[in-house]
View 1 (cartoon, one colour):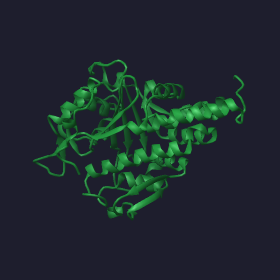
View 2 (tube, rainbow, N blue to C red):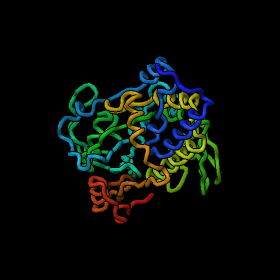
View 3 (cartoon, rainbow, N blue to C red):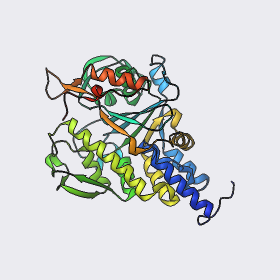
View 4 (cartoon, rainbow, N blue to C red):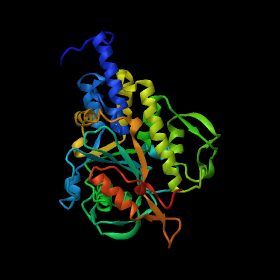
Length: 354
């Protein structure tokens, strides 16, 4: 192993400052927390963190029937938050729910040149057409219409979620990153908490988090309740929850920026260990080296210019508790991302707003 300059040397300090500045530009929260992950020190640290990561081979699981890549330099990454109650997750949410669903889903588009990004949240209650898929055991799951988007994960796994998003959008998903309850809590606690500001109280309905209007410092457990709050804030809809999730994501990125979290090797290792413990990626990202290389390629992206959008949806006429994809808005949104073009203002107008 090549000797490194001491932590107090000018070159080391400059390197830490550069690392911190790079981190500010990385859009994907999970990837941002893993950049420079090998800096934990030595082979043991590398193999320990590397062994934490689970992966799925998307090409093998989905097959060849996938959208073509339109703009070679652009990247599309599906970020999933799983609500599994298995293992350590069961202690964080005691709801009587079996299996797991994609509690949060964002398609993050990084355009060619990688100087900005757009995150499109897909409401979990959206009624969609699910394509035929293979589950984790290789069994065929038949196609179906008018199923809830978040049910796809529980029935057929993350590869089928990727295939469903590709079918909905016509966009080739290059990578996916999934973090479960325990992983999310661990990341927040490794940062020492995240600060959020509410313009109105959160009531704590149905076991949710109760907060007054104003600024609050949340630990990992409360942060999980915050992003999962539905009935205690706003109109109590899943669409309203998406706003909280997007707000928290930006607050967490701000916390990383404030702490220069990735410029401190000790804190970096703590973050990387917490992040990889409950991390699943596609097979192309399933190593620290691959994650760090991908993050390095994103160094030009600045979170301050990141745009967050909800997929345009409308209330379903048969079941007003569900939503359907709104056209032509959604089609215009997907086409702009697919072609790596500016998103028209009309494409951001969702009839159902939450």
